Length: 346
Ligand code: 9MR
Image 1: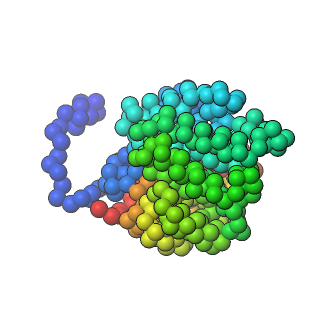
Image 2: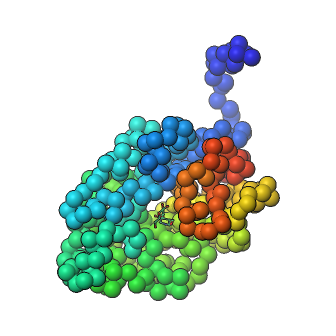
Image 3: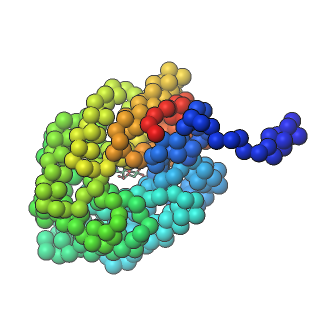
């Protein structure tokens, strides 16, 4: 057995096949190559540091990474003017060593803001003029630090409500709707080569959100604001129908000249796990990749964690989980195999 294995390993590489990719991919890195897209994952920085099996799997499978939390404002500036880049730097360095591109997440959000900022705004010690300056400084500092190292930034995250109105965040309330254009301009100035995205959830299917986001993009473009991409988070659940119109929605944004990315894909289920549920989940993952591949402008599919050992889902949805491609022991689930079997463009 060992001898046979040694012979196989020693055999010369087979000649290039005349057809593009006749065999299923052996892992996600190869799948990404076959389809000419980037396949990424959110990275849990503690797991990257402490769990060798997690680290190996991450680096073997993925060509793109997003920091799940390490680049959020509360992580990088927990006290005013005190920057803590260690975790974000570690992720960037690991990516460099493993030939992974990076999505920066996220420059402006209403969640995971540092307490000094939210309390200062609340008690009035930070007024609108200062808040705008703080935001400009934050975006400039962070984007500049990773200039040339981040392929794409989620510049603004979740700025539209479910009913299609602009989100009532501190940004809208104190700075007015112009904060969105400002954020893109500041980010562009700090790194003119980074691709700048607007990112949201439920954008796969929610009509009011889709229409408002389309009009935001049109307005920005009309003003000459540097915006390059639309991020569909893609937090799905098998208890809901698959968003059947997703590829068409992607196309509407692509028609405005944007790059399209699936930025946070996961497919949760009500526990317990059953073979039937895993099969349905596999079908959702397969359809998401197929939808991306059907739209030429869709260049990236990123999953929000790749193992059920580290997923935000159980902590946020009681009784739900098992949302990722690999189980807690990093064994491939049917969804992983379904992705490898997808045939598509190129
Ligand atoms: O996965 C992230 C989780 O660890 C954090 O506790 C949570 C805090 O809000 O944010 C999660 O990531 C979110 C992402 O940054 C933006 N889109 C929704 C994601 C899931 O909540």
